[in-house]
Image (cartoon, rainbow, N blue to C red):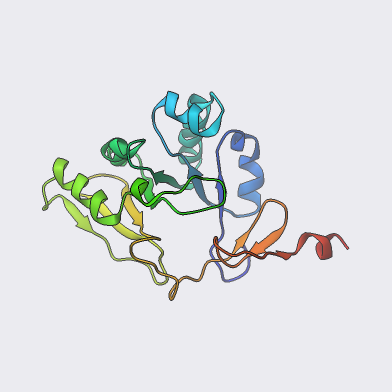
Length: 201
């Protein structure tokens, strides 16, 4: 974190409470939490863990400890697309960013175009609940991969990462370090570069 970059870590938040002090010491204050449903049954179906309450409590803990929290929800038509408004309502009192991610084809995830919830469809759903004057379009940061919005007077914000319908590859400057020490220059990259082995040597 001493380098001129922005560091964030992605977590399922199941045991992140054990690492609060370590994250602070490393000066990692941006936490992305993968949370595809606010429904306990759906959460268990997705994660194979009956730990929704633990994850939710840890999200609240991270907020109270001063971390900047983003919730990443991959939308799948017919499964969790009816929770879009529920997610946005979290931003009413919580200073978080909810990011809706278009369903992307990865090996083994049974991707089907019919399951895709597009940027346009998310905004259509938003407009069924909120008046156009309430939905504020925020200015995106340079190289941002998301289109950012906010409901007027809400503490937090929401964003849409339209990987499939509005690709942003030409401006993306993300680089990822996996949990096993591999560098990925793109989520879709077929190759990785090993950093852990030379580090240990």
